[in-house]
Image 1 (cartoon, rainbow, N blue to C red):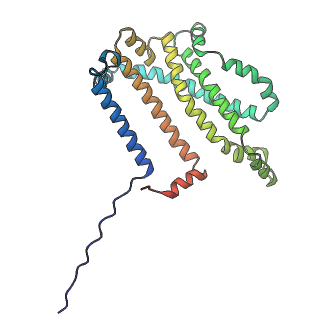
Image 2 (image 1 turned 90 degrees about the vertical axis):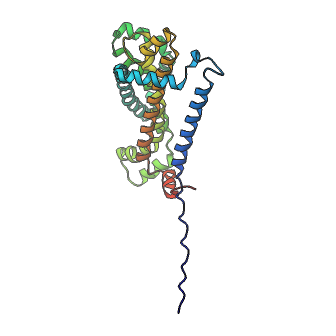
Length: 278
């Protein structure tokens, strides 16, 4: 009579979190910890009047959204922001690409571009209201002036910084001027361009808000100014949180687009090859 022995089953290997999941979890923990400290400290360590508290801000945001007034102000601000952002991005890219390929014109225009970029946009905002009225157009123009130079200088620097060895090799292999630009220069400069676009997002929102501070009858900037004039810290903080959320969401969308478009980079391939991290 044979004795049958049962081998113990191997314990299941715990699933490891990827590096991206660990980063998201750490961010979530940090946000929760900061909100908890803010909630507990408000009214104990510092007066609620000065910084409000997360619970009050959450209630205010909920009432603001339910009333429908939130979407009216959000649409007004986002309309001015996105319009100026799109125009500044397109023209900034075009100007950066052109001047990077025309060194003589770049040297001639350099002091004029520096002078225009040195003008404080806050000083221009009242002039734009005088020139274009109090509707959405002056906000769009103000956003454009902020975004254009950020995109332009990053595009120009990115194209000018392309390694000469790559372009020489492409020439030797018989690439045309168009192929050289589209297949070598532009891909190499794309990280600089995306950096400029991401850096310009906060400036675009700031430009729209400043324009609404100066003259407006709607928008997040107008709402924040109204709540501040009434010493309603909760309403002011709610508006600021909405602004931060917009910037973070747009930056996350651009990061996803950049990761997809620049998947050919060696560092991107290394991250995919490593897979989940311990």
